[in-house]
Structure formats: structure tokens, C-alpha cells
Amino acid sequence: MTMKIRGSILGLVVIAAVLIALVLWYGKKPPVETPPVASVETNAVPPATTAPSAPASAPVQSTTPMVQTTRGADLSKSPPPSKEERAIGLLSTYNDVPIDFYGRVEDQFSNAVDSAAVNFSVRVMNGQESTVNRGQVMTDGNGFFTIRGYRGQALGLMPEKAGYTLASTGTLFKYSRLEDQPYVPDANNPTVIKMWKLQGAESLVSIDQHYKLPCPGAPINFDLLAGKTVPGGGDIKVTVNRPAGVISGRNPQDWSLEIEAVNGGLIETSVGDARVTYAAPDSGYEPSETFTMSNSSNTWYEAVHQMFFVQSRNGQVYGKVNFSFRINQNPDDLVNITFSGVASTNGSRNWEATAPQP
Image 1 (tube, rainbow, N blue to C red):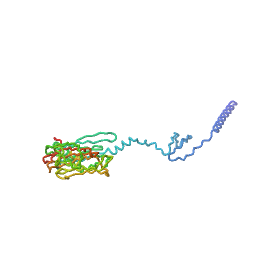
Image 2: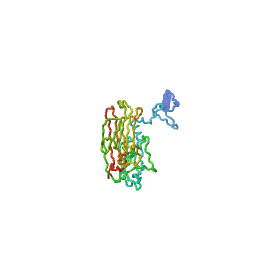
Image 3: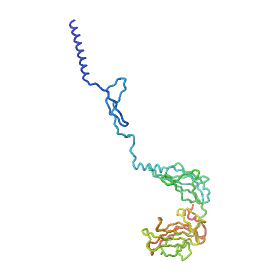
Image 4: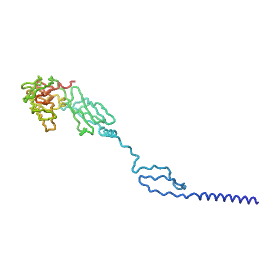
């Protein structure tokens, strides 16, 4: 009995010692405070804080560290484009344009040219590629045709049909928005392309003459058919007026040049228009043309280059003549004069011999 009492007392002593040890252990730990809630600015993230274990009913706070960002920074933005990327973007914006075209092919009498093959080329230069796409469409019974489904900066046209030749110079259409006046298609107002219906070629005289002549004050007459200067008559008369002294780009003195058609008239034109003109105009001729080079003018030149339709010898000769003249630098130097082109000599206005024959 005594042993049982001693065992019980010993057990109580052990339990009491354990309890005292636990109390002393927990009494040494400092109390845990709940961290205060930080006042967070718009783009600032508070530093991470390790929180004590929360009760089961409380929400769990993440303890994953967060990266603090610089005020105003936006990590979602890409770096600015390079100069090359900006140039490509501009080309794509301005040169990659839908190519729509509504046209009609007509002859010199405004009649429809049906079943003509319209060859076309689309120029592409958009920063990604630089190429030319080609194709062909046919005109319908009324001469109409349509080109669609392409993108690029310009469209060139070349219609073809046996017995006809191109009679228009305006066959390049610029769609690029970099142009001052880009071409705008209109389905209700088709663009007319002219073709010349050949009537039959005639024999023409070729003109290819070059002169180096003194520059007197008197007129110089030229026989375009014989290819020489003559005392009078002929087809063209040239008169030069110049002062004494040197004439040059560094010393731009006033000078003038008069060109007169002998017993006929002149019409100023361009090389491009002359190339697609297959009959001489029946009216609109002027007896002469004068070119004045003034020192005070912004268009002063040492030379004159001009294409003419020429009627001479009372309507017996019709020519298209490219005329070039260069003033002599010193009064004693020679002037340079050139004539080139073709002429009919039997009173006919037909220039079809200059057209490609089918």
C-alpha cells in the first residue's frame, strides 16, 4: 500500500515538473504583433512580410515576394520601332493601295475597240517586296474593261489589237498616296484609252539634219526635204538675236530665237504626243514661234528643244519635227541646229508610216 502511494506521488511530481517546464518555455517567447496595414500608392508595392499562422477561419495571406516597380513604368509596352521599321510602315501605308481600274478603249473616231487585249503591270514597292505583277484582260463589245484584285503603287496599261496602234500617252496611273494627285478610279466614269485604227501607210521622208553655222543677224532658211540651207523658201526660217560679248550660264545675257514656217504654220507639241499622232492636225497652226531668254527670268537657258507639227509650202508638206538649237558662247563661234522627224510631201496629212504595222 505504501509503495502505491509513493508511486502516485512520484507521478504527480513528474507531471507538475513537465507543466512548470512548459510554462517557463512559452514565457520566454516575445508576444507576436499583427503587422500594420501599409498605405500603398498607385504604382508602389509594399515589401513582403511574413505573417503568423492564421486561424482556420481567417483568409490565408500570400507570402510570395513581389517585385517593386519604378513609378510610371509599363512593362507591357514594346520598345519603339527602328527607323527601318518606320520606313517599312510608311511604305506599306502609302504604297500598298488597292488597284481598281475602269477603262474603255476607243479609236480616233471615238468608236469602241472590242476584243482588244489590255496588258497591264502593277508596280509593288511596300517595304516587304519590290516587284511587278503582270496580267491581261480583254475589252468587251463596248470597249470596256476592268482590273481589280491587286495592290500596289502604280498601274501601267498597253492595249493591243491587230490593225490598231496605241494613240494615248497617259497609260501610267499612279495610286500611291505619296503622289500630289494620286489616280482615283471611278466606275461611273471609265478612263478612255485611245487606239489609232490604221487607214493605210504612205511613204514619208525621214528628216535627220545637223548644222554648225555662223550666227549672222539675217534669217537662215532650211529645206527639210533636201537637207540643206537655202537662200529663200524651203520649210523653216530661223532668226537669232544676240548681243555682243560672251553668253553662258555664268554670264546669262538676253537673247532670242524666232522659228517661222515658210508659207505655212507651226504647232508646239511634245515628243510623246508626236509619237502617237498618226495624222497631221487640220487646223491650229501659227505662222511663227519666238523663244526669249531674259536674264531676269528664272527660265533662262542656253538652248531650245521643241517638238513641232509643221505645215509648209502652202500645205504640200506636213511634218512632225524635233528642233534643237544652242546659242554660241562667243559671237564668232558657230551655233548648233538639229532637225529630226518625218514629213509627207504630197499634201497628205497621213503619218501612219511611223506606226508599227501588224
